[in-house]
Image (cartoon, rainbow, N blue to C red; front, side, top):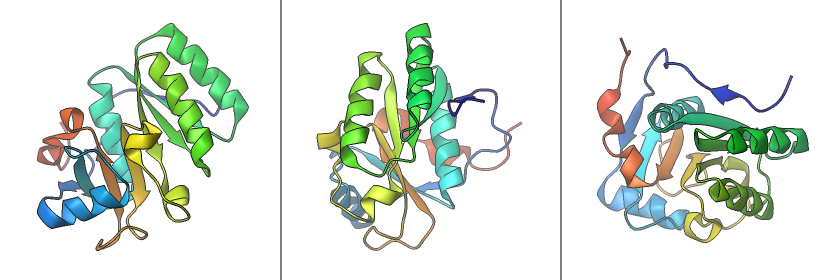
Length: 171
C-alpha cells in the first residue's frame, strides 16, 4: 500500500479551531516568519489542524498526502499531481528544510498549494513560511511563543478566513 493517500469524502466532524488576533497572532506569525496577512488558528491537536486543511482544501479540489522521507510516496504524489485536480498537498515527516523546499517547488509547478506539518523542524531550527514558499504550516504549539498547547495552523487568508465559524458536527 502506498504512503500517498488522497483525503477525499466529507469530514465526519469539523475541526475545533479558533482564530487568533492581535499580539498573540503577530507573535506566532513572526516566529515562523509568516506573511503579514496570514491567518493563525489554534487547534486542539495536530489531527484537528490536519482536518482543517482537509476541510478547506477539499472545497477547491482533492487533498493529497506525501511522506517526504519516502521516495515512493513522492513518486505517487507526482502521478496524482499530473492527473490533475489536486488542490493541496499535506507534507508530513519532514525533518529538514531543503527537502521541504524541493518538494514545495515541485508541488507548486502543478498549481497545488502546500501544507507542511513542520513540528520537527520548528523545534530545532529557524523556519520561514515566506522564504520556503509554503502556503500553510501545522505544528505543535510548544516551540512557539506564548502558546497554550495544542497545535497551530498558519497560512494564506483566502482559504482559512472564517474556518472557526464551522466548529462542531457537520450534518
